Length: 320
Image: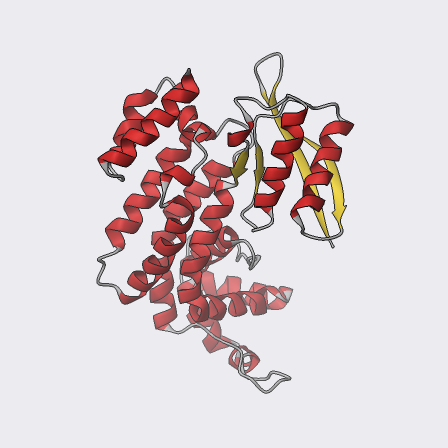
């Protein structure tokens, strides 16, 4: 069983974007029809019949969810611009999947830093001793250590970014706390815990954090709730595409392996533009800053002429 939250996004009579949670559900299983019926119940309960898109994550069952909701809304004659473009994949979730492919290459270095942060944060006395170490190393950063939520890569990025600022403090702390090193050795199952971080871990993390800064910014832009984000979608995809392509030939073995894995995941979801909901392209055209010329330029920088022509025709048909 699991819980599902149904959120409605709409523009009110004053042309302000609104976001309202309209229901929580206890889902007995992850079958497409089960989730689809819950969404249907929520929409009917609020008298919502006109639906533009339904955004879900990329679980395999959600293809069935999209198909189910399409059928129901179409029967109500409430589908906007036809039902074919109703199913919208969560782009922030796709970025999460892409980055997690890269995280696999950094597992040991991340674990070493995470375990060290967890140890220090587990007691006020350790935190105070760490603060003194930071002062002795003349570290100017005034924030505190951050422990990540392992299922959310952006929190891992923030943990590593902050930890790098305290690298010298970690080294000094290891020298001044006799129990720190033994913490990584004394485990009930007899296995050594990964850590503490060594110079190669800090070096790899430094490269990793600089590389992921762009993906962190993209996630923030995709996840904004105070303003519309669809018109920025393809601009950000092009930036991700450019970065991955540029680093494909990097000589850094760590980055090379990370980029290869991330590019495979990128291609799965965004490699073929015909698999992307065309309404996201339409949003760019309707943005007065970009229009069709900008969209064509983006297409031409990534795809061949034949595919560009098909994509442009698809967008133009939506404008009619």
